[in-house]
Length: 75
Image 1: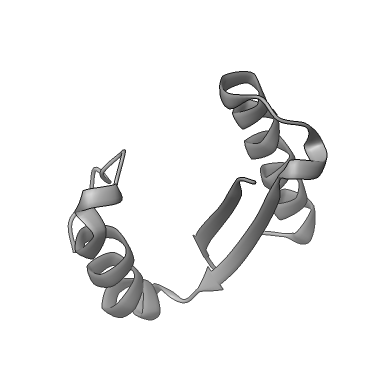
Image 2: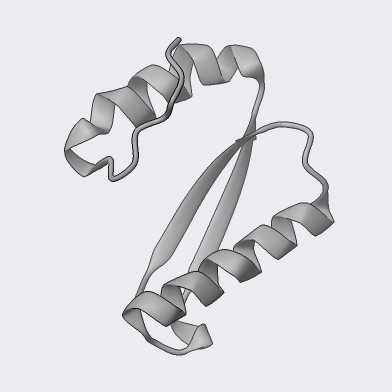
């Protein structure tokens, strides 16, 4: 059962988040299959400061062993 955890900088609307979740599921269904009922998506908002201090060093660069696409920026 695929679950996607999405972390964003704060400021996106609820409509944008709903659309993002829907498109992520659609893309995954094309690649790996499964029905819509198999997927779940969570979206968390972060301030830039939290991104710089927590998300980037811990969840991105700190998990290179499971990182399939590195960011094109450095902090």
